[in-house]
Image 1 (cartoon, rainbow, N blue to C red):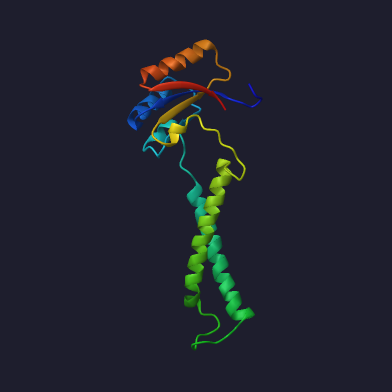
Image 2: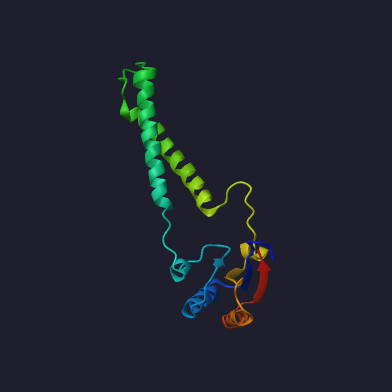
Length: 176
């Protein structure tokens, strides 16, 4: 086995309701789940796994506030210092005229900032190769994966028994 490689035992499920029951059972049995993979978001899975709410919306607010401030200050600088032109009888500093550009820069900064933050946090930068356990996980299968690097044969048999007891349609092993 390669250095840094993980031996993973995973079970595939056909339905998200069966998956939710299996995850609850794994938590009740105190099994250490490596990860759960689904082709679409499954309502109620996060609390069962004990995952906290994402703070990406806080980052979005901060990026939006920076964009709003940048847009307003930039428009103020352009129309009062850099190129002060009176047109249409408006004064140099006409805040209502700055609102459309300020709004657009708020949205732009928030969107780009959240995308970059998401990619950095998830380790999905350019050149990253993310191994998949099974190609069907992105299509129509649901998966619970356990890391079995340090597991003995009894623990692996216990996990296989867990999969058969919870309705897994398939159980596989893969090195990633």
